[in-house]
Image 1 (cartoon, rainbow, N blue to C red):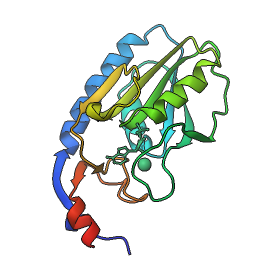
Image 2 (cartoon, rainbow, N blue to C red):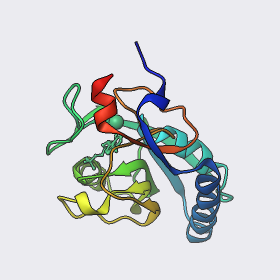
Image 3 (cartoon, protein in one colour):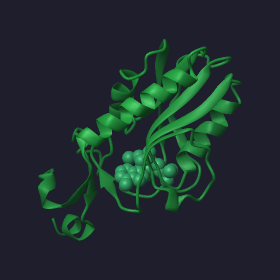
Image 4 (cartoon, helix red, strand yellow):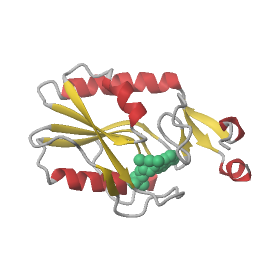
Length: 185
Ligand code: IMP
Ligand code: MG
């Protein structure tokens, strides 16, 4: 049974209104920066998909979208360990493109570092990262992040694309999990 999130929500960390406002700002910034570019937004599935769909509607320059899936956690784990595995690769050639990776959250940095390393070998014209959330204190490998929605503390969060065991991605806000209440359920 998938539980009602009210049973373990400790707080709403970022409201829908705050997310919308910030995405409008980031979208405007991207639109300025890529005015003369050949922009390709690469969404990292599945967490990045909610952010991508809102972000792209705030981007006013022509662009295309692509999807990639990476598995960083073992089944049922909540921390990534080292090298990520590409489970769905891009369908298009990124040579000469201005690639902007769209992620939900950067935690240890291992996932996005692996993706950056792989995509760099395909010689895009530029390769940058846009993340909604950054758990900066948790970083284990250095990753260059060009656009950040919000820097957050080291708490496990869910909603707005972020899952707990694949559920709750549909929630319009970012909430913090009360791990004690969660594990009691
Ligand atoms: P990293 O490789 O440690 O940077 O982990 C990045 C991935 O871990 C993200 O794409 C998320 O899928 C997942 N993740 C990290 N922190 C959280 C969290 O607080 N809630 C939900 N998913 C998370
Ligand atoms: Mg996840």
